[in-house]
Image 1 (tube, rainbow, N blue to C red):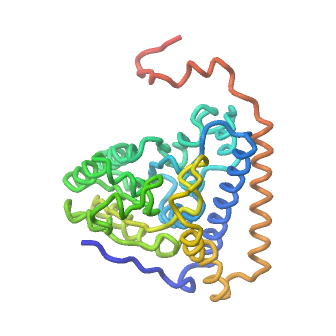
Image 2: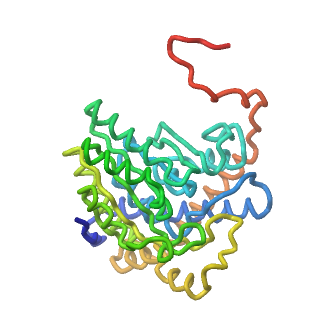
Image 3: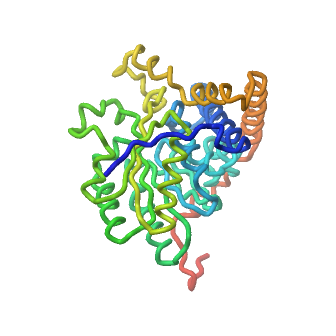
Length: 337
């Protein structure tokens, strides 16, 4: 059965954690705004799907994880990567196709992975990482590790059978995998109301007897608290959880999407609950930060983002020989020239 998650008062959370949450959300927002700028100026190859408006999810979830825990991401994965520990300079390098990128510039926006921080990779296939995350969770159980695996996916992925097969397997085999549905209410340009007969996504867990919660994805503390409960369940009993985290993407599905299927009034209505603005107001009300503090944090993060872009831009392109590397896995008992 699913329950609605509530957030803890900021006064009950250490100040250093509150500041980290705020800084991470601002960092993701500024990173994505810079990606938008690079793309529109034709300085970035490929395509990008921006995370603007959804920052509270990646930050709230990853704050509840350790560096050793696993995540799998989506085509809209910059926020997940950064929240899990990726550095902006190597992220930008990957987006610009540079050798210093996480995948040597060969993955681009939709295929960034960083095993050192537990990031098993973004995936351009809708719902494609569900099997990977579930397999990672099974490996945790077989190794008797204390890790958890987190699978991010959008509401559009619920049209893919792999999501349901994975959740069923996770419950049958008692796998410590947490399924995070980032319900931004549109699968590309199709409203959820036109694509799904049951709009309460968290209720889909009933078919597999998986614990579930509905979470306000614009409230970073509510996301964090719900994830902490799911993590405890996974670590203690190797049990999966489905979290429906309802949010709203302020930009189009991708950089080429004019968003004509939405009205300006609808977008502005949701922007009133911008996760960064909501958290800013909460921190001010609790006396954690002042207007000057917010301005200083934003200025420092913006400076860091600009420096990361400069470093990435000055990095060399990969050698042409890289076209032939990282294509096949080499068995430990074999050596190829």
